[in-house]
Amino acid sequence: MATISDPLETVENDEPLVASSPPETGEALVTASPPRGWIRSFFDAMCSGGEWGFGLVSLIFLLAILATIPIANMLSLGYLLEVSGRIARTGKFREGFIGIRTAARIGSIALGTWLFFWPLRFFADLRDSANLIEPGGPVPRRMTIVLIVLTLAVGFHIAWAWFRGGKFRHFLWPAPLRLWRRIRAGGMFSEARDKSLGFLGSLRLGYYFSLGVRGFLTTLVWLILPVGWMIAARGIENPPAAFLISLPGMLAFCFVLLYLPFMQAHFAAENRWRAMFEWREVRKQFRYAPLAFWLALLITLLFALPLYLLKIELIDREIAWLPSLFFVALMLPARLLSGWALGCARRRGEPQNRFLRWVARLGEIPVVVGYVFFMYLALYVSWSGAYSLLEQHAFLVPAPFVGG
Image (cartoon, rainbow, N blue to C red; front, side):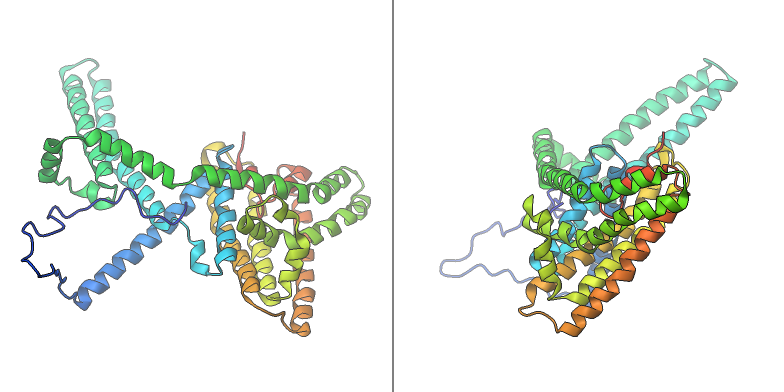
């Protein structure tokens, strides 16, 4: 969801954009907009802020739903990777909030459509109740006819609201005079087709899917050895022996955790396969912003810990998107901070002093050790057992939240 001008945006004002009469010879046409009062400016700012907040909530819902759909979940992972990559590439934190206005438009379309279908559901229930009392009677027949008429009317109203841009106010007021003028002008079908295709193209779904697939595969390469070692050791029936044999895998996993969040951000910023394995470059960047790296690592692993509690019980497929909301809501800030840390390092021209670097390095050790220890304990309460180690929701898609 790249930052773009919204293709669904339509001109609400039906007045001509320029004066109908040409200017006098030798005189420039000057159109000065009247000064805006502070009340209007404050109101516009509040509306813009409300739309941005609604867009952020809509974005989290969209990513959560995508994350529970096989194959489509790569779009969710690709977006989260792009968030960190764009901040690392530009060095600007605000660049990580990608497509918020577009998500607000999708959210308003979904919410408005859902709300306007509720009266139809209510009337359909009344018709069914009347049919139970008097099967095949005149009242249920008349109610069926009314229901068909209402369905056509609501469907047309929703289609007209979509055509106008899909903002919530378009669902509240049908603008009948504008509808009549637009029908007389003709060409509504071709305009709706072009707008829809342009909007779908602006979402860059192919790019996010490709980035998600490549990020998933390269991340899996880093995780497969330590995670596979721990899964194999977990199969030993003697718990103390299983723990001792798991130690090499746990130590290797600690090493991977030190670099993986930032290698993912580096990979997304460079958009190269090989960038995911340039751990020495990430290690070099650590010298320029050690405290930022430590903070990003702390938040990433700390926010991932509560999600292990969701693995205690198997989640039904119908409500899998609910726990996935926690995944997106907690991992989005982590991705933002990972990109911010790498962006800070790229902007600085010289390494930080040795004392700060060693403080950050020593501070990272308890963070990764505590995370691995908690993750190992969670295996004893996880529904999937040792195989839940493959469900690294801090770096991959939230596959464990889909039940049978």
